[in-house]
Image (cartoon, rainbow, N blue to C red):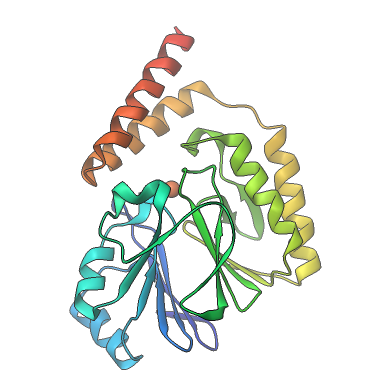
Length: 244
Ligand SMILES: [Fe+2]
């Protein structure tokens, strides 16, 4: 467990299918963004921090351990309707593409950000910390729009979702994959714009797309998301036919 800011913790990265970075925020209520593996040691740490009231899932690929964690702490799960087959029992279902305050606490704002998946959603905390999901990766101090090969709904929508972030005053982005990045807001805005420009001119490598699709299909199978498996098998067939 690593402290990012006074009341924000990073629980590390889970490599398994359905895993990702997960974070904890101690606000008026206690929040997890994605879920770490609920080991005995971690459950004790979370209990000492006051337990968990809400678990925000960024999208369908990273739902591993959320149900078990929610059950342990009787926490409410928050998930977007367009990925809801990945978390059908979520207590709070986000609807539509408008930003919305969560749990009657203006410090927590859900930002639907379609593109990586249909129901991909970001969470803005305190107006400056953005749990950015998979729409963006961070490598070192570089921001990279999620590569086209690893985008499951629409590359164009994902780029537009990231571009819209330039209207925010962000000092820290916390991705599902890669490190957290803290910068002055103006520098953050510049780097997001640079990432968007690079993404707009990037080409798709068909061989890498095939490899990514095969990995993703296996992950979706492991998570029991049959409809997504079938959708991606169709996409895989198209890419392979086009390559041939
Ligand atoms: Fe993802």
